[in-house]
Length: 166
Image 1 (cartoon, rainbow, N blue to C red):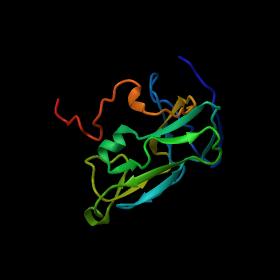
Image 2 (image 1 turned 180 degrees about the horizontal axis):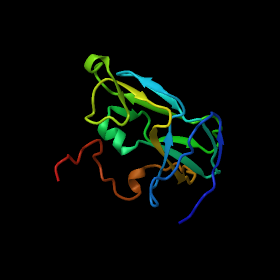
Image 3 (image 1 turned 90 degrees about the horizontal axis):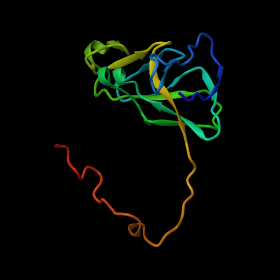
Image 4 (image 1 turned 45 degrees about the vertical axis):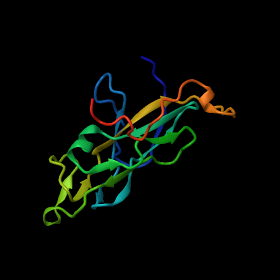
């Protein structure tokens, strides 16, 4: 398997480095660098305490962790997010709480809660909140043509035109 070295700077104390949880995982889990509380309908940037030097020709995609998406109303807002090779500041994960209400007794729920409870969520320092996937990025060169319909076949439709039933 091909490995690409990515330089990392730890810019906050006590931060865990991202890591693969299993041998063939595509993404490294990245952790929160501090406690963050996210109320219903709020979007916040969760700091990671990390700065990266991504090699030219690559990007890192920020993707959701499936367990968080399944068990909570927390979402990675711009999924997948792109970290460009030229970005050198601290990585932040944009997280939205899509809860529609405050939940039971304004209780705070942890990221490892189950049952997709509506309400306020507390991401704790060290919680694995997203995954980072390194991707090679070829550059586009645009070419102006008279009509793209002259190139191949237009499948048409789009935006749900094929329906949902198999």
